[in-house]
Length: 483
Picture 1 (tube, rainbow, N blue to C red):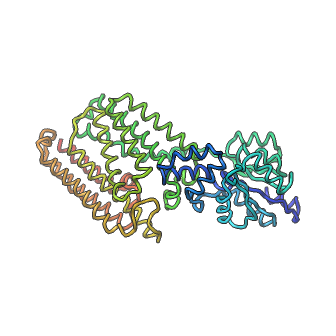
Picture 2 (picture 1 turned 90 degrees about the vertical axis):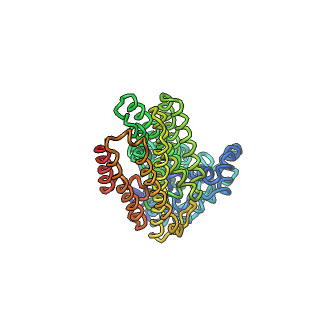
Picture 3 (picture 1 turned 120 degrees about the horizontal axis):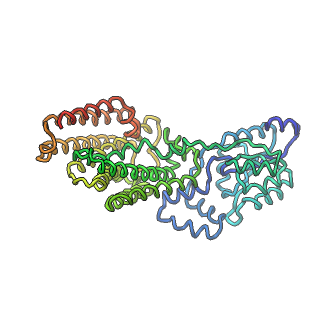
């Protein structure tokens, strides 16, 4: 479409093409990205966002430029806009970037894509948006003497002043409004609202972890009680919704790190398939639903769930950057799920079960870190940003993972020797067969991690690995013949 109109205008057409940045050239918003990076990297300075905003949006953006690096080089670009830019450059037309973002950020983006003739942006005093942008462009290029690509209702005054409106339609409402006002406007990208990215952002495969709330009832042989089963199911959904909310918050706060990762770069927020404001609303809604369900269970469960939420937020904001503290917290979060199951179902607390979970899931958390480091090592990359580990820490982390894993097996052995064990199983000696299975599975996970053949999320590995399934089935059979 752009090629045809360029030919119609003639080879001598030198009308500038002006391109918006946020949502138009990049698929995300620099202001939201920078604000999240301030919260993620300097949580103690988050309160400054309010005082900076009180001075106006331009002042807010200026202060954010001074405070954080939003990692512009890794932000996803919009293919349709890049095509329009390349077409204009091939026709000999000048291309300018004009954005409400601070001019220093706009200059970085211009340097990234290359071939840009000039930039315009907010300067700390004037927020270059809407009528301000329209006035600045008319002053520089003249009324109806430029074409403009934008993506938001706030661009209406700019399209009024442009020769030809070119639109990235972020919503059906925007497209209809533009077509009513500018019948000849060119729509080069239309809204896509598939459900899949939202579902993916919730990471439903991670809900498998929350099956741990059933473990106390299974270990106590009361899983057949309908009241206990119902309470466990409610606890499962409360933890699942709360966990999904926490994953969304974590993804929003770790956008640069995810974009620098071979797999995580495809996550919905890293790829900008879902906007940051919608992600925030999702997180709030999911957390509210989780708390509502938890309020229907015993008060102790609600307290445990809230403690889980606080710990996950602390992990996302600060603790995940602390060497070894992060893996201990991750292991603890698994154990908290077991505590939640105990509180929801009224089962007796078992120190054996809690100790096993703490060591076993600490081992899995270390395997997760090792897999990430091995992947970066094999890809020739440096140590991961925003983490407390270096590539050469693998020599220490793998033995630590083995020690924690084998400690969990030792807890099982001690439990199998306890009087409690004799009262629960008709054939307790058969339960000892579980120990070699655990040793095998843990050792294999560590070996695969060291080889770079382990998925960097052990839960996905366990759910998709045939050997893991066979090991689990074998363990279930052993328990069945021991009862």
